[in-house]
Amino acid sequence: MPGPPPKPARQKKLEGTHRKDREAPNALDFDPATDLPAPPEDLRSEAACRCWEVCAKELHGKGMLAVVDLALLRAYCYQVGLMLEAENELELNGKTETRYTANGSHQVRSPWVAILSDATEKVHKIGQQFGFSPASRTRISAPKTEKPKADPWADL
Image (cartoon, rainbow, N blue to C red; front, side, top):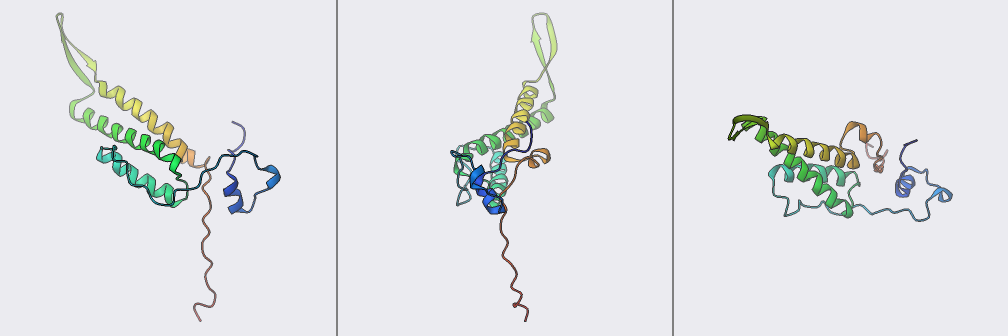
C-alpha cells in the first residue's frame, strides 16, 4: 500500500485541508453515533461486555463510532471474550489432553489451543480496523475535536 490511507472529507474540513476539487464524487461517509450504545443483549460473556463498554466509550468519545460499525465492534468483543475463555481453560486444564484408544493412551493438543489461536488472530484483524494496536493507530486519523478557547477576560 503506497502512502497513507485517505482521510474522510469531514475530517479534512475539521482540519482545514479540504479541497472540493480533490473530493471523491461518491465518497461513502457515515455520521458518528449520537449516543453511546449499550452492549448488545446477545453478547453474554462478562469479558465481552466489559470490552464493549471500554471500546465503545473510546470510539464514541473520539467521534469514530458510527451505527454501521456496531456489528463489527460486537464481533471484536465476542472474540476477545472467547480468547479470554480459551486462556482460562488452558490455564485450568493444560495444553494437552489424554486420549484413550484400543492401543493405549496418548497425548493430544487441547482444542482450546486452536480456539485461542483463532480468536487471537480475529481480535488482531478486527482491532486493526478500529485502531486498537499501536501500529494500526498510526494509520488511522481520528477527527480533531475543537477545544473551546480560553476566555482571556475570565481572570480579570
